[in-house]
Image 1 (cartoon, helix red, strand yellow):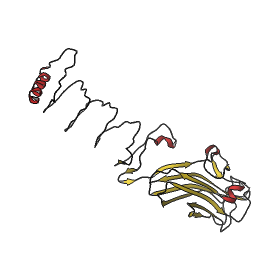
Image 2 (cartoon, one colour; image 1 turned 180 degrees about the vertical axis):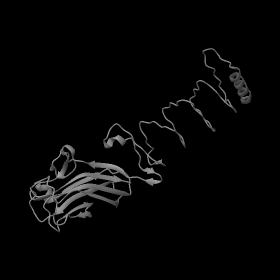
Image 3 (tube, one colour; image 1 turned 180 degrees about the horizontal axis):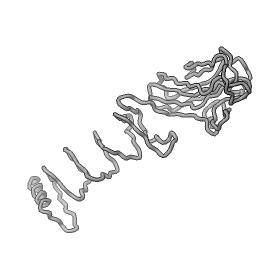
Image 4 (cartoon, helix red, strand yellow; image 1 turned 90 degrees about the horizontal axis):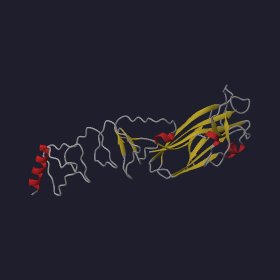
Length: 271
């Protein structure tokens, strides 16, 4: 009986038979072995074992496919189901009218892979703009001749004496962590004076400007700065869901108005 219905259906389509403005309902299976052409095709469920070619737009509340290929894919949110991975083979270019880090927040993936390589995912960035020091155990900030604000700085005695610490909690699942920051050596530093950073109470970075020979003075006292914006960039094996970061220094002078330090643009990335 299904074969007979299929033949009748195919003949109706070929002959251009219509039922006026009323829909035609066929309450049986219909098998189309060749081409089906229609201005509108409406179905609660459509199962196709071969290929479907659409000349114009496809509009759907949800599209689920084992493989989806498109010249242009426009979406408000690109998000895999929990535990899955977004894989991009080739270049990825992100365009947004906003210059803020939130411009790429549509990437809600547990892992981000480009060309077969897992990429770093920025999860925290403390720029201290507007003097914001949320989560840090000291709240002293400074500027150096500009509106750029950083943590610590000239005459900030608490930061100079005890350092600065923050716990970054709620990290996504990962096996490695990357910590970046810019460190300022302010005013006069002597040979042997050393700045450091610790992650989970382990030393991961130390640096010293040596005997101060700087000639630029834009911060603090009348003495030129030992060094500004020294980059700290370290990568560690790490899988815990929190990380404790601590900055400090071992300095000859105990007066932050004569010798001090600051830190800016602290970034935590994972992969």
